[in-house]
Length: 226
Ligand code: ADP
Ligand code: MG
Image (cartoon, rainbow, N blue to C red; front, top):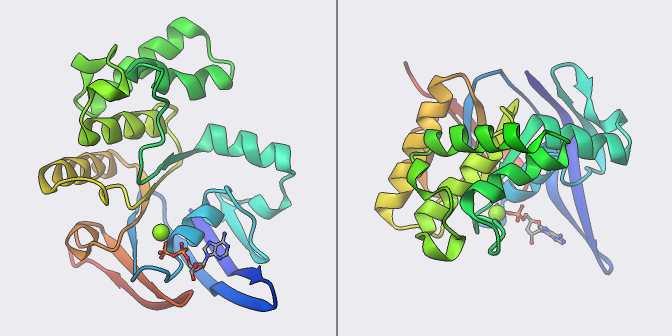
């Protein structure tokens, strides 16, 4: 369970203050598939950055499974993120000089997991995104959709409590986008908590819950009828 309370993020640009997130409070239950929607500039990425501990809010708290993350030191935040959170970026952010398998092993090796175990886990993760036949391919030998699947495998290889995805399909064609959403729905079925930012409403609709932002405020919060 994630508890977000009075979350505020302000960017100061010269004399101007921009309130990117304006006192947001909401709960996300374990296993939920939540889509954050809203037009460009509404605060989606800023929200994901705060929730995934990539950035610190000006005010408010984020508690994950009763751990108040605002109380963690910088070092503790980094290791918490590495161990418990997974993040997928719009542009995949995988390393061009490493193979698919090596890209996925990297976060495990950084946590001190032994190489042979990391290798096995990387293979399992690639199987979950249906890329088991692309283990030793370099990113340049893969399509955009396949590269995004590598980045999903990397984000789930350590069984994170929460999987974050920021506009994961924005650079992809319709067919690849649908494949990515199918993977998310499958992970969700297996109990994965997912928070995905997207401005594409057709994809947001597939999630269990939609929170729409505008100017850093929640303007709607709807649950799909079962
Ligand atoms: P979205 O992801 O919904 O397009 P963002 O979260 O990227 O929106 O941006 C929300 C608002 O905060 C925008 O007005 C944007 O210009 C501003 N913003 C985002 N990041 C920064 C930053 N690092 N410095 C200054 N302003 C920022
Ligand atoms: Mg964004």
